[in-house]
Length: 396
Ligand SMILES: [Zn+2]
Image (cartoon, rainbow, N blue to C red; front, top):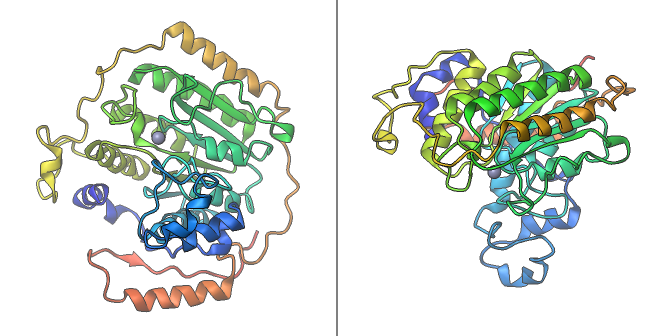
């Protein structure tokens, strides 16, 4: 909500197309998740919780992933938005598509993890793979992007690159540089394990010096960028020293290559800074300069006291434990993987199924019609929301 207020107050909605996406269907969620797990998510509620306690440990339900009212609905809404964003990229309707409510990178095929229930990232990458031979996934959340890495661990069509805090204990406990993929996917999982307190300059230098050779070696047709905001300084769960401008520089640099880009949210536990970051990164995607003083008209402006600035100082709270030597060695380890790739793997693309934009055309139209009826008077913000018209076929 705070991100929305900031984006609207800065007038950024006038510079982009806004869509109200439909929910993900069960079939779409089943393209990655296991039947039994999705059934469980669909049926469990706080009222019938007792009937399901025997499967809680199996599906990793507990402290980090509680059952709450509207859980399945919530999951289908954010996953539907990421899927819709992937469709906009595939159809060429958008060159950059953003879903700040997505980016739930920890969810696994059979289980919830770290506040994530349905992995919208995996679903949207699977959709992009129906059109693009290769997709690059980049994760700048402070936590390892384990769910996405695991999903594509044996695939050479998805390269995953995650920068995160790692010491073997920090959640989720994985993401050392020696996790490189397996089988066909060997050398296609790249991990950049970092220590506490990394600063703006080191992070940006490292990010750029890895991403550029990755793009040259892998040549992706599309990029999915998870912009978890818990890598900012002063995050309640994070432990880095990054400012909004440094985090945003990663988005700017990724965007500069002109490859279709899906931008997603993720973690972030100091809401006033999460919203500042994502509003700023929206402006980067739009190539618009924002006044760093927050607009006076901003609702809930009190959240941004005392500085009322888009770029508060978030650095210097923790000692930087990443020495130059350590970062050099991490970079060398990561780039070493690229030497094993014999140029970009060529993928024999089959004819794309005709339902590429909507999965199931008829269902999709029925949902869209119903959605339209339900929402006719529901628009509480005066936005030019465009109704999606899905065509049956995509010419290749
Ligand atoms: Zn995180």
